[in-house]
Length: 217
Ligand code: G3P
Image 1: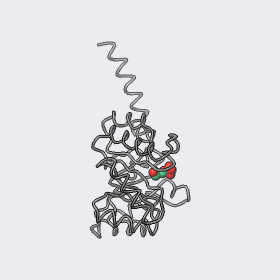
Image 2: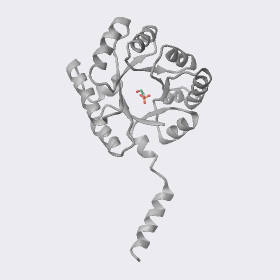
Image 3: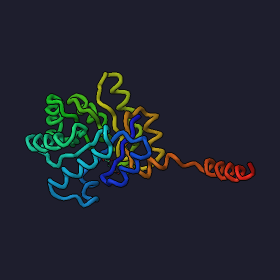
Image 4: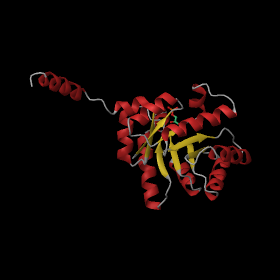
């Protein structure tokens, strides 16, 4: 399973990259706004900086448009920033049309705001490179986000769809473990959830004892 970081914060991207386990980055308009990025030139420059940090990893850059022609125009500009840019497109009618167009024109896509297996089938039919089910938001609405990942994984495997399942809206380390178990190809996570995987009280207790005994050596 690939690890992406779900942020537009350059320091956090650098920290995850330095850990040596980072395969890519996902962003969205909310995450970009949080970093104070405003205006087309600043947006394009910010994506460029992210691509420079992650090197070979994929970087999802989301379009703001909702009509076919504007999504294509915006997506082409984003894709031109770097060969690792993946154009993130919402699961709407014009979005699906645009994903098909991008696929036919060798531009990789990430279909976002996916909350059902039906939407995931449509994204795969259109040729999306990645499909992003938002598991934390599904949990928030009293449904089971991880169950959706397992359902999509089963459908894609039976049908032979090549679209990669990118589990998004991850809220904690347990989500990452459960998504790995359920067959996600990628997890995109906040830095805290990635670092949460490190933690176990018995590791801390064991290390303290080893360090104490090391002094007797
Ligand atoms: O990038 C999409 C996604 O990961 C959003 O997460 O926490 O806003 O539900 P969240």
